[in-house]
Length: 125
Image (cartoon, rainbow, N blue to C red):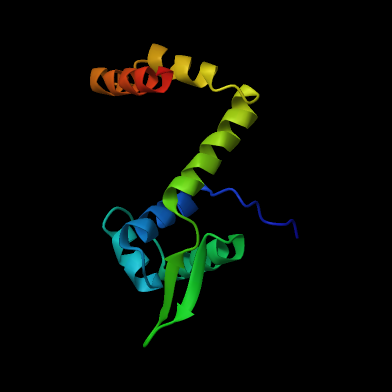
């Protein structure tokens, strides 16, 4: 069997967003949250929580009635790693093409562009 990749899949990231939002969850908590948006099997959520633990994204502790999962890494740290990995794989380590693509594809609102401009001005100082 191939070793699992440490990068989050789309489904794993969906679970991590719930975990980061609540900070402490059971499989049932995540399952019920996902059911609000889409159909998913409880056993699928349980399996994915185990995978997240194997990958080092969550820790598991014994609770009163169920295992309690907590994020093992802060959200910003994981996001930074995902973005860095994406830039490295897609743009050979250069963020410029990514930014140009976002601006040219009109994915950024005027407000977002203003915020980025303000950040760049502060960085120049």
